[in-house]
Image (cartoon, rainbow, N blue to C red; front, side, top):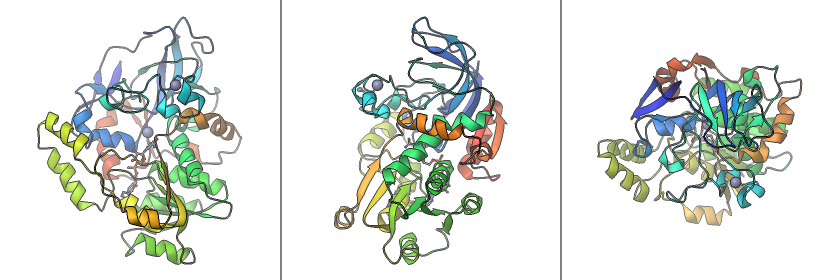
Length: 393
Ligand SMILES: NC(=O)c1ccc[n+]([C@@H]2O[C@H](COP(=O)([O-])OP(=O)(O)OC[C@H]3O[C@@H](n4cnc5c(N)ncnc54)[C@H](O)[C@@H]3O)[C@@H](O)[C@H]2O)c1
Ligand SMILES: [Zn+2]
Ligand SMILES: [Zn+2]
């Protein structure tokens, strides 16, 4: 089968790899019909290089048709249409029972000290072959895949794999009361969808980014927007818009590759010249993230407000302004999305006749899998108006 593989820093290649097959009686194999490219994949493309291995199959936003089921699978059969969550959760352990699917105790990676395994996400998260491929092996066939109806386009359901539950959780964790204001920092796919969900719930949304077409998409749906390259400080601008207080909650939908953190960016780049083993050691013990977006969130949130972090951070020594956080009485919530915690609620919304969140026009590019190497670069560089790419294997 063809698959997108990591072959080195900024080097994705589509190659032939052995077909995915049923290995455990509870597995299913899915023939992938659509599979997303995510901001999280960009972290593998470059900064997380030390944790990648040549040949790793990447991708974690797939959907398709069940081709084969293991002997113990009872609820799915060949021909069923499914979306596959990006985190691999058993559905029945202590964590899964509490809705903390991204901390699943059956797939937690105790050797690396990380949470539930993720599809296509490095040796930090189980080194499980990912979904930017023609076929995908999916464990926990009765608990993990989300069965969706035949009929509507793939894009109607595809974003259940990651973007929708991640954005949904971000808004839930932001916990803004009716009539409140939510600031969304970053208008990539995650920030964009979080803003859509919040507006659907009737909240006032202000979105920040520097990429014009990303802001324009949200402006067109009713958000107020700030181009952060045109204001002196995001916090000051937000306070001007909120009676001097700041936003009731802020979603950080940017993460470790934020623009505007020159020191950490230089350090990240310098790391690339060291041997991989040394890079890995340094990243695990001394690395720091690019924190510009998180710092904006801390500044722009009102006193007693909430910061909901969905952007991925990964460094052990990030310097945080503890006095400001404590004095402002800020609540912070974060984590990988617990996909299965929210997927039934979201599916009910997607099954409505109206496409209330605009998922069918959400992707800006549908491309064959072969175009992945170029798409990764363009998506990172935000060329061609690229906001969300869907590959069609
Ligand atoms: N928590 C989860 O479960 C989960 C799931 C999916 C994605 N993510 C993470 O969410 C983040 C966003 O993902 P995406 O797919 O939208 O990626 P993306 O890279 O397309 O979007 C990030 C956006 O942030 C903007 N940005 C950069 N620096 C900024 C700054 N200082 N201020 C304001 N905006 C800034 C960029 O211009 C870009 O539009 C990534 O870190 C990704 O790894 C987390
Ligand atoms: Zn993703
Ligand atoms: Zn579990």
